[in-house]
Length: 195
Length: 74
Image (tube, rainbow over all chains, first blue to last red; front, side, top):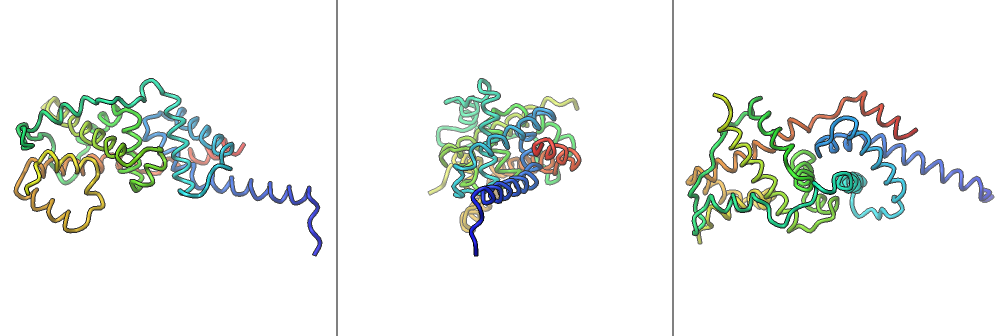
């Protein structure tokens, strides 16, 4: 069999890359849009971020080594792009106020001295959901991303660490601060709500 | 040795028990049965996850996703 002329081989390759890219866009655009909204962006901004994410993906796809799934790789780009957009507010502080608030709830021996309060129900009510929604919006970027990928996308800790390029110990801190912060916020809003 | 409540709820929030072996989860349940504040804290963690999935877990509007795909492809 004759070898294809070089130009044609190039065209075939280009066409295969285009098809693969189209397939990746088809498969992941919806998930990325959901994540962008979950990271706290509103409609138009979320769509812009997804578009930027794919643009970057096309530029750096040669670096994708297949150690994580394409979706994890795309989440990583989406997350970094979002951080770039909101760099000032996104920075995770070394000391989060939730750490102090959490510590104050316990005695020196680690027993409860200020037990948790707030809703305790099996079925989520519309009222509780709207209170929690307000709290979710207040999380800092890194915590929001870790919480979203864990709870909504149900990604494993290893996948989240790959996507966010963080170590497992950092992920534990982010999840603790996100969840404990949300719980404290829910408690406050629950007690302040008009009866 | 008894693990203090502070350590239990901290590990819970950090996700240490998310994929823990059965014996560890059973131990946790036993603790919750004896300690209502830890039990309430744990249920509130579940509530937060449920609320996040209800708020963001739905697939976005298909028409909107299709428009976005077109925009990216073009």
